[in-house]
Length: 238
Image 1 (cartoon, helix red, strand yellow):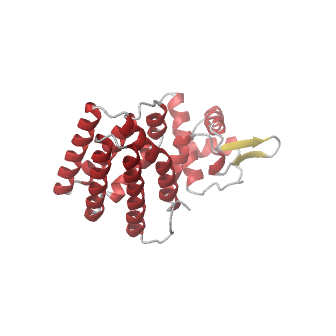
Image 2 (cartoon, rainbow, N blue to C red; image 1 turned 120 degrees about the vertical axis):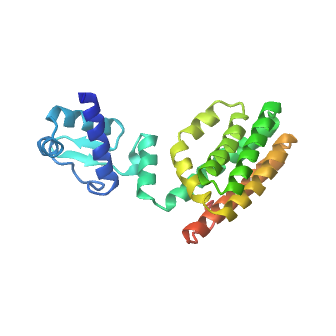
Image 3 (cartoon, rainbow, N blue to C red; image 1 turned 30 degrees about the vertical axis):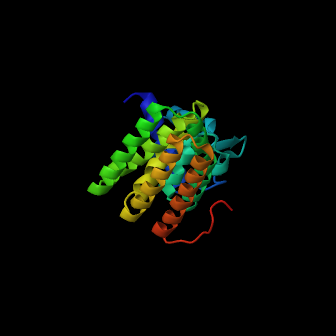
């Protein structure tokens, strides 16, 4: 195995240890020699793996004191933050994700309506057909994929390249949460109703209506998620 692969493997293993709480916030990582012995690798491999974590601000070195674990809020790598959220299964993640989605997608729907064209409407219609077919077949992976395709089409239609790029950074966690919500038939049915309203407003070029329809969909998504996880955290916007 190439050393680069060993470094990546050890980086991932150390990240897992941090995410799982083996090394908690403000804890110091074990010395290089101990990590090397435990992993069966060289100290150079350990040094490079820890360097990867430092570059992402997952850990920081305090000269003379050791290498300390930083809180997730200080991490500079979005992939690592998303991975930690999914692995921990923290219920607050869904709330935070919906907050970001509301910020991006509500305005995105309005822009999509303003910039609509035949290709966009065709993409939305195809996603709707796929979603309805998956719902009828109780095909959860297909339903989740069609749901994501619908929202992807809306954000691409903003004609602002920053919007879909920003959204793409959340793809992993979006896929995980869509699988969870798409597993409930009643949730799929409500989502389809909201998707139709969004599609119709965008196709008609009604920016304000598209914005309102997407905002209502965000409310529906959060309400349904709270029912699924059995909690009552209130309005996620507040």
